[in-house]
Length: 176
Image 1 (cartoon, rainbow, N blue to C red):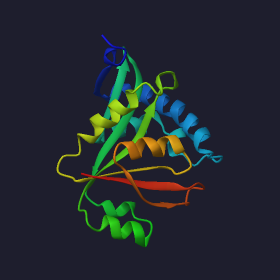
Image 2: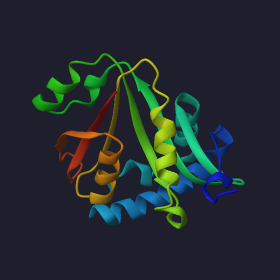
Image 3: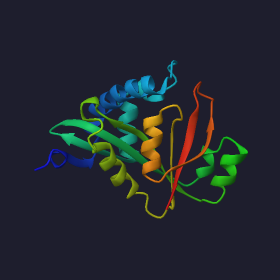
């Protein structure tokens, strides 16, 4: 059995909320540092166990587990109004062509297994989920070169960026 195959990929359950929240917090501290974000505008750093439980119940939250410990997580939600992600004429013009989308959030991989292919495996699984929609969106800090490269390698394009949270935050899209 390869190292990558020893992990179990499954949908998170509400009882996993605390462990998922802790993983996301740990990963977002690293993401914030790598992105050069100096303020505390990342919602993921102050999320409660209850809000994570709610996200797990309402959306598709995939996790890679090593036993009971999640080593990676990604959430994909279906959205019937992609225009809600518009913040400029440029993004509005792009999103006006779509009536639904998948939206990726809370993508996190534990520090000890970064750069092992687990994040790629999670992303590939998540991209299989938004049935009926030809568009998948996500946001990330444009200053985080490694994350942007990763998303580009998966076929995402940078639609536009904005600075409302104190750092340049890009809206990335994958059109299938």
